[in-house]
Length: 411
Image 1 (cartoon, rainbow, N blue to C red):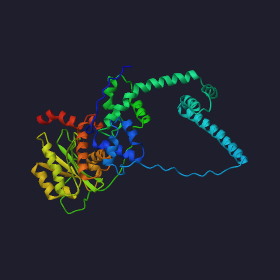
Image 2: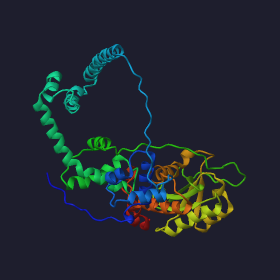
Image 3: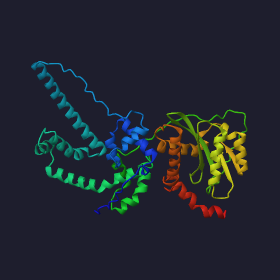
């Protein structure tokens, strides 16, 4: 096994994204860990770095140490006869519990081939030894296993733990930028590093290792209606029913999502390239005004690289149908396209991009809109430059957007 070369360097506050800081603050205030444990788990340098984040971004008062109060407990006295009766009952219950557990393990091993008894007996023997209930020899005798088998298993496990030790640091390093990136994308990004360091770890075992280290993420699902399609303004037909983009900047999809801070609700307008999945323009606002949507469109037009004709697809929201927005589309020679009624599946890509930003990046509430603007800016950059997509062959949006430049220019 090759020893990994140390790449230790002193980090500064700029090495940690705002999203990562908010993630750590939320975990500490939720009680999942102390701020000192957070520093150890994530490898954060500096004695008071996390405490500084808590004081700046946390909702609790971190200026003074918490007071610990001991609960008062009253224990009723019992007679010797009651004690004997209680202990006999506990012994009988424990005997029955052991019978039931052994029967359950035998059934699982027989029906599913899990091999639980073989896998867990050595752990049980060690557990009895640590609790000083029985010596290791006595525990092995009772469980029908050998001490040599336990030593060999522990030796293999220790060797594997040392071999996989760098994996957690690699995962946490990526999670500093993408706190909720999924396991498949993590494995794709880390596989070259694993091969380089001589670590043999398949995808399924990688998932198992993430689970054992508590590094798996759970999907968050929420839904809030932000579209008002019942209005008198002109609605345009859906041009994407018979058209599929074959290159960047042929189709732009747009949608709105809401984000909450301690100040209230804010609205994020996004314009995304349908082919490369790149976020081309965005605008964060306190209101749902058509002029704010135009700002996201203007950013999109300024960021365009190819002189191809384009279609702009959106829902039938009031802002998209407004005269000011339609005039901006016409001025940029972009054809409007809209869903048939309020059908989110006809604008699924834009809805998906909203979900990625909210479920993987914009996870924790900011104090105000200025802080949220910083978080949105860095999240869009990380999404475009660093996050791979399964639908793009595990490439990033910017890689796909730039890769097809020659094709677009020739067309």
